[in-house]
Image (cartoon, rainbow, N blue to C red; front, side, top):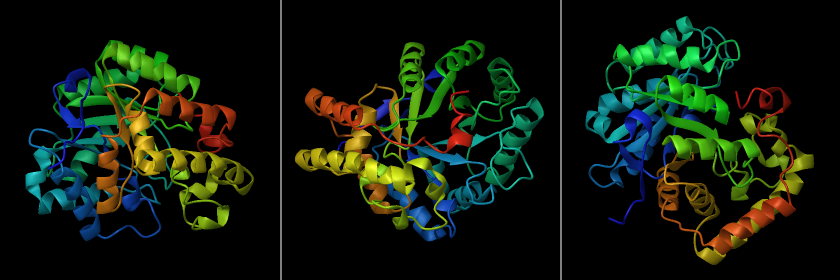
Amino acid sequence: MSTVATAQLGGTASHVTVAKVSHGLMMMTWRAVPISDEEAFETIKAGIDALPSGVKMSLNSGAFYANDASTANLEMLSRFYTKYPEYAERTFLSVKGANRPGVTEFQVDCSPENLRRSVDEVLHVLGGTKKLDLFQPARIDPKYSVEEIVGTLAQLVREGKFDHIGLSECAAHTLRRGNAVYPVSVVEIEVSPTSFEDETKRVLATAEELGIAVAGYSPLGRGLLLGTITKFADLHPNDMRVKYTRFQEENLSHNVVIARAIAKIAARKGCSAAQLCIGWVGSLGEKVIPLPGASSKSRVLENLAGGNVVLTDEEKEEITRIVNEHPVKGGRYGATIDVALWG
């Protein structure tokens, strides 16, 4: 078995050793036709089976990961753990929630009542097949202070509903304030060569100072940096990226130049573009854990190997020069969603 790069989580989970590359499960169910249980299960197992004893695979799920914001992703996980109970202790399960119930698109509600409801919903769907290791609100609700939010989550931890607290899409000052109430184990933010804003850097620095792990989601720029999407017509009409400004035709024709440049560096290094980007994100800190999605066995193994890619200073400087000289066009999502980031 080849060596697998590892990392330690933060906060109250600092004793947990996980693979350097996490496994995002969102696209297994957040698509027009979810993949079959057989394919999903074999993909999840492949990543876990590649790890040595004592190292856990960090699985990232959500209470609303479906086209209709349903619990389909959690239901899939419940079936997985029911069929393969021996994999429960080999995984660290992180779930995003705090979604408003009864709506078909994600809306955040971090009221104490809804945080409790959301956690209880996750536990109900899992049905005792797997301990909820970490819970995090998917966004910071501006109606409530982070002190109130983390205070409520801390109470739920004390009640034994889950073990560790995470935050997602929060600003550096928010992370610091939340961590002062109760240790934050993981903060989840988007990190890639094309999503490396000033606030991204501040969150990374604050997390390192406080000993908090960073789950860097979409390290491949939502697939932009793979170079497989070169024109808007390449996207399926039901693909969520058709709504994202970086994939609109007028921006995509500009952004694919970045993907081609990344591909050239990867070819020289003898790895895939995905692995290069994963290696780049992982190089940002010992506790920075790339979080790509994967819906096939081959992809999860390719991503996992990206944790072993070590970039030279010259290669990192070249990537920085590419994105500085050819800045990405378009926001991370779209105008109406981008304004809600960095809460």
